[in-house]
Image (cartoon, rainbow, N blue to C red; front, side, top):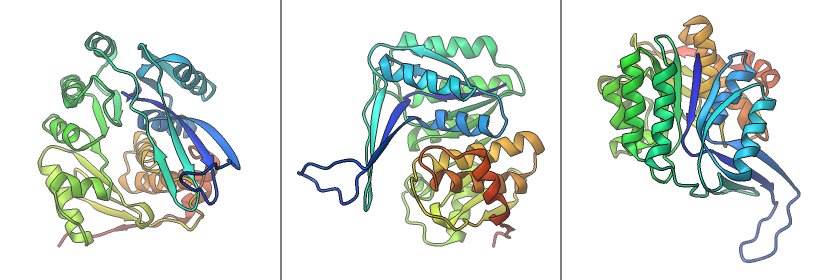
Length: 308
């Protein structure tokens, strides 16, 4: 089975505000409410690409109920732990530039986290895949990620990991199947400025040496890089289109990649679908539809490059 974990989900309020002026009254030209959080975004893309999955994590309050209902309408099974407080609402202001205000979210206590661990201890089996994505909720830290990573490693479960510096580094000894830093996060991981493809690949190989089996790097409009566990290096382009909303594009890249990999175990085809999925979300309000992903697929070119 496929599971996603989102420690700190959100409802994303996406507001269209042309010529937004700070310190003044601004009126929206339109708004959308979207179930958000990296793992939830991945659940949606996976399901839209035909991969059944169970979404887990922590939810609370009216916004938490909104997310559960949103997922159920998508055909995704929600298995969240209920917490006190209200699942956060993030504001995404779309004007001449994008402005985001992310809330902190409710506290997740030790007992609530242990409920999630117990759930996975009861059901995980060899061959399952767990997506662990996003920031820690208040009350959690990198040790929470390590506990999930350790359990996956012990059960022979593929861990797909997309999170922040300390949590990612702490999980590498447990050999996650896939990690997905973007270029900025890769620079943060190593405390460097990366200006060439060669440097980017060198750092990706270093992450493999630290334990990651596969490293997928999202580079926005510059496409994506993959360094596979076989040593293969692939790069994708980005199709032409109008950027509408970059939120969730990296999540869609990773989920689109894994949806095809689950089906074929083919790195080249998986990167092609991943790149199409990421771009489709960037060109959409909310998460991409299968129709747009398939429409963009012919425009994605995959090149294999040799490491110098």
